[in-house]
Length: 515
Image (cartoon, rainbow, N blue to C red; front, top):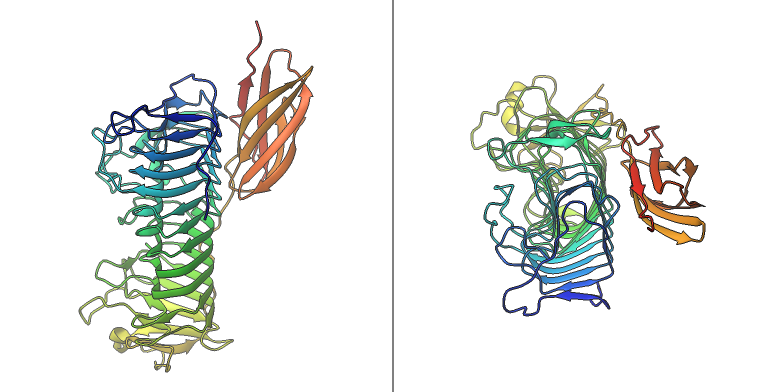
């Protein structure tokens, strides 16, 4: 991994070893940052004194942002967005900060875009005095945010002290989650920020981050919650040289695409409740590729399923490849597995499937029922049960399978069990547009912009004229249009998506007219 930190425009502190400088945009500011170098900035331990800071701008700088900048050796974060919406942070390099690197501050920030950025070595620090979200330990995340309605695409994190990406909302009672948020139609009101799902989180990557590559929320069940039609969706993640690759502690969760290479733990202690995992690959994960939970507190709270789960070169000394949790918070919960593939993968101390170390008693209230479809034999549905509950199972006889079931797991063939549909996602969120520049070409105007969405952008118009979408990937569409200059200097950009959603809060940009 190589990043060029040098730029031909430099902003730096006069005395990096003394009192450092900082930069700040306020409400109704204009302009933006393109391909500049910000070095030796940030006042350590002081609230609001960051290398680059958008402070309570809200939507007054829509379409502005930071493009292609390098921010390095910061004593207080790289880019902080506070109380601000509709910014574009793209192609930036952050290298060595104290505290979180790319940071959204108070959980009201929405519709911001972080695209193709690199976060390297955000070091752990301490909480700042009077910080808005008191629960945040400021312990070194490359990307940190607390409102799901933002876009994170094609970013890379590396060697950050604790997290590559941390979506962090605290437990009930630690802060008041009822915040004034603006809705997609432009209206606003008090909303529980914990129920705001991800706008787009796709194609992000982590290398060698200290503890977690990706962590979504905290450990309290139900504190961050989607629903069957509006789950938290993440797509196409990659984690390299991780300790824990992923810990998802949200309800109603869809992970569509994960590759974990050279890690100790893969998916660790997921808060199972309407979770769907598709197309998951573990390669050279050597401790616990899939740990569903192994202690007294590890409870399933809802059904879950894995579809297409591949283990390659996972050679374990002790634990099973698939570690199941014993208990549920209520009766009749089930976990389903389909499409499990093993390539040169085994556990010397256990087997493919087994249960974790808890509970410590022989009585298991509300055991989880597990069904493996076409595994270990094609055309057969295999139920896996814990040896501690076999006396209560009278439906058939259970047995072990050498090399496949571990010490506590027994199996029986069953019939009539379908692979469930746990989620039914609908796309009813309109896209958002950003006019990023308007260039004068005689009587013409060349208008550039970006649209982002949780699906495919199909159309962008400016003043009713159709723009050309020049590229589209991972929820981000770049577009351009050449048009006659607007008589009143107004340019209104509106996007529509494949699901038929049309933007209700368009970008209404007013060109600065010469006097």
